[in-house]
Amino acid sequence: MGDMADGRVERGNQTRRAVLERTMGVASVDGLEGLSLGRIATDLGLSKSGVFALFGSKEDLQLATVRAARSVFADQVVRPVRDEPAGIAKVWRLCESWLRYSGRRVFPGGCFFYSAAAEFDSRPGPVHDEIAGIRGEWTRYIERLLDEARLAGGFREPAGSVDVRQLAFEISAMMELANAHSVLHEETTAYDRAASGILSRLRAAAAAPEELPERPPVLEFPVSGFSAVNAPAVSLPAASDR
Image 1 (cartoon, one colour):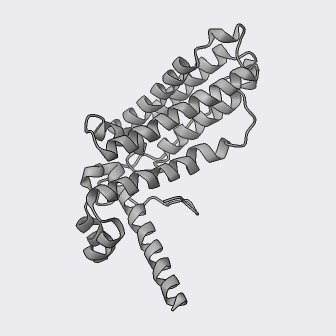
Image 2: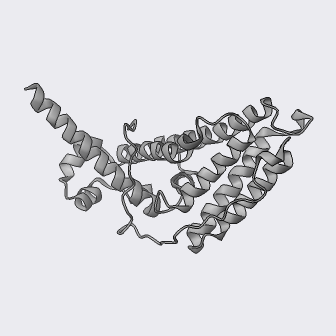
């Protein structure tokens, strides 16, 4: 009996993973409101009752999709630089990581959380709160890396002259504008402009600008427009906390 129960649990986990990999791709193009239990069941050849048993409601499906997208974002953007030593070079590599995540279309509609925030920014409720919490977490992470760089002597003296929150805001604004411009116009030059602007801002504040490249690398990405119909699934990282 135990083996049978374990098998059912594993099949349920596999189905849940397949559903979330599909919903992330669809939501990044068509919005979280574009999700429905029936639609996803049809897309994946599942029964609607089976999807309902896993998620219960459209809102639960939306929340699970947002949380799965957070896991993908953390794996693609944060994990590659997480173990690097504190300093302004780490901040730059985090920005590079974000620009590559957006430009490579890890989510087919560009940055998942940029589009999700635009969709739910004025709509109170659990989905809004989840998105706002994750975006706040990301902002605080940038601020933390900048503050660690400051404490490590990474900024020009006097150290207090660098407003960490303001700098984090400017960095985020340039990254998000690059994402928005690229998705809207289906071209990628905005990533190079954002990289140049961010690097220039960091070098101007750095105590040792030679630790940073003089120029950003050219960021070349394929430009592909997706509809919700042909949006590819988004792979969840292993051992994702879904």
